[in-house]
Image (cartoon, rainbow, N blue to C red):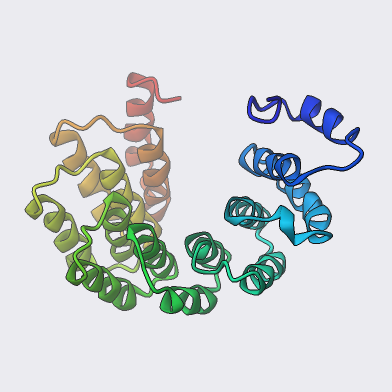
Length: 259
């Protein structure tokens, strides 16, 4: 009860007084710690579980892998993966493994897990696409995007936005615009997250003129920018060295109470 309510202090107090913790108790402590951001503590229960693998199930491993991402600890992720394979659960924990390796910057491991999966869902494809976009490997990302379509899976917002932002970051203006238009072509309406993706993408890709153009287009579309929009746009002010632009953005922040 305490763990599910986020009161880890009380949950820990009771857990430490259990003479022989069962799988249910250990799993709850791992899950609650990981999902409340106490990654070190979640991994601390790892040693308890290793004494008896009967404690572990796919939910336990998903939580442990979330903790590995939080700590950016690739080696610990590999440890968890080894046990997952030993228990024959790789197919059930495939998506968290892909996410862990991708976010830790080791796409080669993520791709091996992805390629071994018998059944891939929208999360599997999207995680791989996002991973390749994050490191600028847009050709591979787009190839996966097309393959996902061919397999009858409609890309979700995360996949579209990752591609839009990815193309913008590598300075491929035509690619970013084509993907943005593709969203509209699919009968979807670009939301603020999509606009933020292309603005921040161009700013990070040192394309300040394009970043400001898309910021203006956001305003003209009737979408109200938020703090994420402004944070993504600010680097563009420094790139063009324009105090005037900086003051304009400052004025907008003040008028819209985005401070």
